Length: 255
Length: 376
View 1 (cartoon, rainbow over the protein chains, first blue to last red):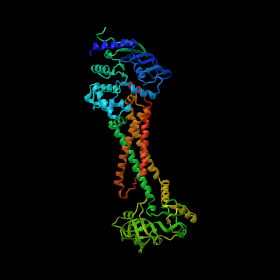
View 2: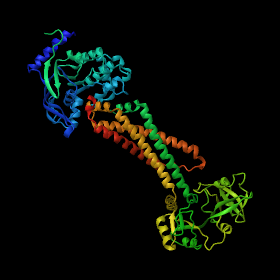
View 3: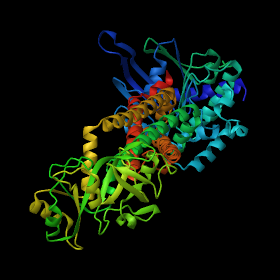
View 4: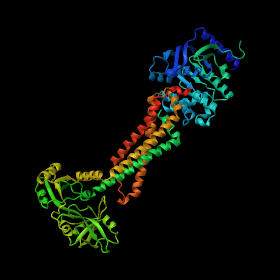
């Protein structure tokens, strides 16, 4: 796919989103989150409103400390919020018990981290199998599906490699395969290219765009790396705990 | 997730080996010290078990078997007359000095058995014939006496020595369990024993008895107490009474107890600290697992599986090493070492406690872990 093709497709989806015909995957209303207590309380998110649509790749950008990662954590249901409503994939995270939320995450979400967070003692295929093992799928079947996912991300010949024997880019590919192995509807990525050099970062974003995005799935990526902006459909900019703008991304070569 | 837990455990070899070493050391120390302690306790009541009789009649104020308090000579007949008693025989037990032909003196425990029946004789004879005790001046020794008194070149069957200036001729050497004090035991007949010792108003140390077949032993013992006003015990009860006295009146219990406790604490400290480090170093990974849908209960099961896996491995290795120690150093009864299944069970329970408590520290840490840590 060329940059031009990608840009045209992205813009088309964004317009559909704006046209309200696109189903909403994540709806955030009046989200507030503070840390600390008393005089040391810091309000990191100050009333966030945000919609994320199925089929799109949304970039969360902004200055450091602006609340991007906190917002991502809240949407992913791994951080309790203080106020507001949070509907994810048709379910209200706000009203979910911690146990239900944990199960919900396991069944519907995939995670890609800046530091990969692969288990060092497990092979690439075994690492990918973890979300399936958590869901109770038998080991052999889970690892077999892990091997298939590795082939999808171009590492079919590295199934038995331990993470320490893989390059940073390859480790992130394994992490992407792990995030996708249980076919999640929501893929959350925190600075997925931050630990990678420029070319590897580009490849990883291409991969996230190609395998992560689907009509029944949405991808949210927190990034401050302007080199990967071209891979997003829309960009939400956070500054000082508020969304100061949500823009469709103008791709190189588009008008 | 059990598979993941075990791969995580075995994948970090340095920590796994440290955990294994800590728990193995703890188990080995507890089993080794516990076995020696129990061996010593068994030795402390060897004077009872070596005689292998069911009922002991004693002075009512008796504290332990080696603290002899003589009773009236008529007691034997009084016990024999009690309903339910099949037989009762006298036993002399006292300390005396033996003078060997080479001029050496040795303190010995003189044991005088009923001459007609030789009840209380050791079950196994290594040399000579125990029945020859009925010959003039005849005595029998236990094998520890031979060892303590100079070895088989100095004293053997046929050797003559003096007891209180009276002749004693060795006719048999018997195999017995070592006693706590390891004072040589010299067996002879009851009547001859009284000839060896200085005259006293009372010379009867104990009455050994047996209940008739079918008669309840506890009832017979109670009858003996009621009829004679003396103490009466089963061999087991008298053995435990003696063990209790040793524990109360010597520092053995505290010494061994301290070592065993230290083994527990050291094992706990090493295992707890290593587990905690293991958890802290993998906190991001555990956070990632939580984010991916692993519940705290799942993570707790993983930690417990890791703890018990390494614990049970350490248990096996520790017991193996302690047993090898026992076989190498305690063979032939040179050292008290008695590895019993209750001790092994106790150590297993202690080990489970160590593992559970060590794991608990990590589980608390994981329970409080916010999966959002993975995005920081």
